Amino acid sequence: MLKMRNFLLLLTFLLLTSPVFAQKNLEQEIKPVGGLSLQDAINCALQNNNELKALKNSLSAQQREIGIAKSNLMPHLKFDEIFLSTNNPALDFALRINQRRFTSGDLDNAPGSFNKPDTINNFLTAITLEQPIYYRKSFVGLDMAKKEYSGQTYEFFRKQEEVAFNVSKTYLSAMTAQEYVFVAQKTIVDSKEHLRIARVRFKTGLGLYSDVLRTSTAVTEAEQNIVSANKNLSLAKRALGLLLGQQTSVIINSIVPQLSLKNIDYTNTAIASRNDVKALEAKVENAKNNVKFAEADYFPTVAGFGSYQLYDHRAPFAAEGHNYIAGATMHWDVFNGFKTKNEKLQAKDRVAEAQEYLAGFKNQIAYKIYESCQNVEEAQKNLELANSALKTAEEGKRLVLKRWENALSPMVDLLDAQVNLDKARAAVVKTTNDYKVALISLSYESGILFKDLGIE
Image (cartoon, rainbow, N blue to C red; front, side, top):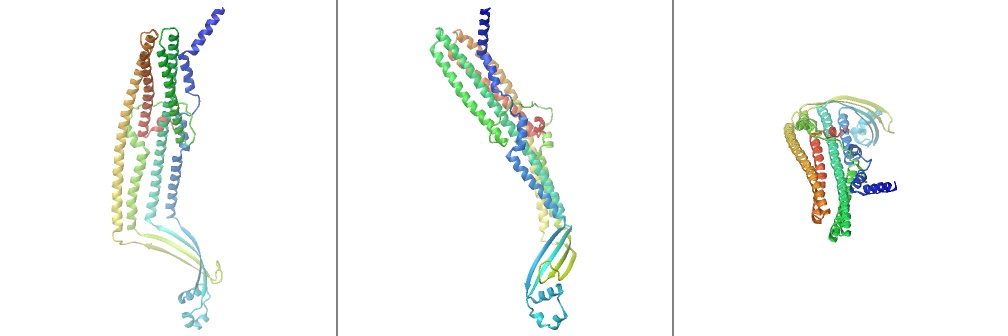
């Protein structure tokens, strides 16, 4: 019974120290529980990214332009307090009348008192109301301000998608860097196992000391590789934090929504849903409004006004005399040297220019989507080939290891097989990342990135 218990303890010890069990522990260590998922990272960036915050303030400032444009259609009320001191004959006569201090005695002293009056002071208190009645440019200007705000809103939405796209790529880079660390650690496990076997073989007289030295060198090289892999992982996490508006690294949990090719017309989807296309369409509409804005000079402008005035020679806000003025004005530039005509023609040229830019942009989108589809297809095939190469490399390494353990192959064959296996593992990591990035790029170019990632 005691021998059986000792045998079980020995078997447990061998299992715990075996490479397979070490790899399982390694996977648990490399892939931590907790951290941000890709969706969490994007939502965090949408709230805290500094560029988005700046654009949000810019968008708010553009919204104020609508209020500014509306003010041109609203009544303007102003208050004035003016002090005047003069001995101008005409003003003296007028001010005395307005102050209601003109008497028959002033006529008795005429004309000498009119030609050489004494200095007179006056405090004028006035409240003036102006109301535009018909001003075509103001109506067109209001519509233009709304269109401009709408266009900038779509640009802001597209910038959000761009930030989400950059976060996605950086997140996948961090995942890839994490996988490279995992690959590097598996290489260390394999290399240490080779070193252990080489030492056992050397001690039993079945191997060479040179094999021990070579495997020891391979362990050192693997440790150097993991130092570089950890550095790249640290930089990737810090880069992700930068996009999230932070000055620290971000811990990820490598949870990414499943992406795949869809049976849709990506080009038509993009033209219908991409926010930068909508922003450019809004600019085309505003270019057409510019034509209306230029044509507005062909129409008259009509406004009403009224003013209530107080006059006093002693103090402000007093009222020795008071009166009001009310009326309406109409202004019409009948001929301004063909200025309006040329401004209208210029605006039409700008419309044609904007339309051509829009058409060219749609053609460019069609090409980018075609390119993205090709990249997805290429990445998918490369991933399949990389997985196939990994299986071959694993089997090749297994066979060479058995031959080396039985003294049928030299150490150099085992080292070469290990190098091929390391390259195959790294290739799988890289092609997996390339495939995911290609799918995300296709979603981004098609304007459906948020939908595919489940971001509201």
